[in-house]
Structure formats: C-alpha cells, structure tokens
Length: 108
Image (cartoon, rainbow, N blue to C red; front, side, top):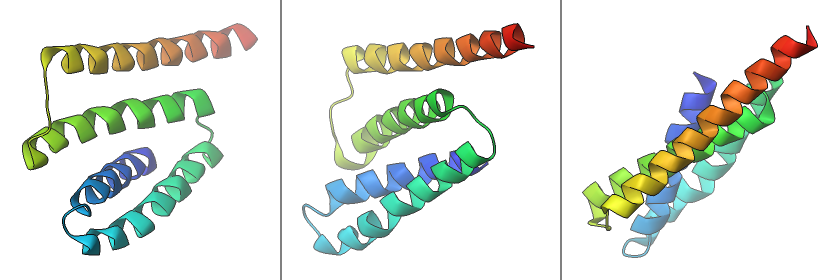
C-alpha cells in the first residue's frame, strides 16, 4: 500500500510539473508531492522490500502511469514504440523481482 501511494503521489507531482507550465499554482503540488513520494518509498524500504525491487516497481509503474495520463490529460504522444518501451521496462522490473526471489531462496 505504501509503494502504491508513493507511485500515485509521484505521478501526480510529475503531471503537476507539466501543468505548471501553463498554471504556476500547480508547483505547490510538485513541491509537496516529490518529498512525500520519497518519504513513502523510504517507509517501503524500512518495511523490508529490497531497494532494487521497490525502486524498479516505482519507476516502471510511475513511468507507465505518467505516459498514459500525460497522453490523456495533455495530449502527449502515446505511440506503439512508447508502449513497447514501457512493456520492456515493466518486463525488466519483473526479471529483477524474480531474480531477487531466487537469491533469497538460495540464501536459506
């Protein structure tokens, strides 16, 4: 839940950064959002999730969410190469997750 909240807040802050180009008032959400996302990510790490896994999930889902919402809200491009790139990022994170699980099993 903490990781999901960190992702949602980071995506909101990033979209607010884009929105602030036309309306500077959105910078308040940027200034509050990024530190809040990092605090939540820190809590995820303290709870015991491996940093590579936590950051990978955060980065992959944050990138995908930002790309999709940026296209819907701001009309940013969302092409098949972008979809393919996001799929590769998510696949890479899954490989890191599976690799860390195997390493944990091997240590036991």
